[in-house]
Image (cartoon, one colour):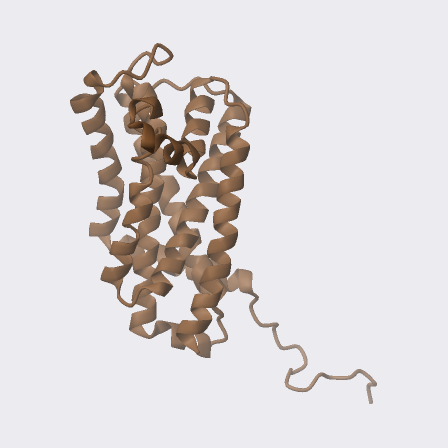
Length: 270
């Protein structure tokens, strides 16, 4: 007779239960499949930033003076549109999370021992993938209308790091909003503020051209260092400490959003 002790409740040779990372990967796949079926929202999140870029470049660009550092307005505006695209794409996460909470699927996940963090992480991972695809599409259109980047290899790596960090942070904030809202419609409305933030920044016009009372907010809000970092890195211009300030903002927003979403999930499901 063997002296090996068998733990109660676990049969000999039984496979171990999936961990949180496996659950998060499964939830991300689920969210991507849902996004693929929701073609209206997917097309809108892809088309709207491109339409705004074309409107600003061809309708307003001739009247906007961005200084001698930029050959044309398209060279100035593309980084701002990329961040705007991230905000639009992340906003759909709030609606998706709110729909899950309203539809009762969360209770089924909990009965399968899937926690709140993997469910939300799956939504955020899917949002990051969607946003990166949308960014590639926006960047491709920008190249067609005259945008010519001059970034070094290290510059490209920093661009990707800043962009992914902001997409993840905005997506987690959207997930927290989805838990806070009582309906998908309300969640969609609450995310307007995130979509609005690029406008009072250096995304579309230099901050110096704005009213004086707006300069303080525009210069120190979290979106401005991200835009300045992307613009400087993509065009091969000096960026100073802007990338590190942008990453610090993104890290802070991410930490707060993850903590808040954990608290809100427990409150909504108790």
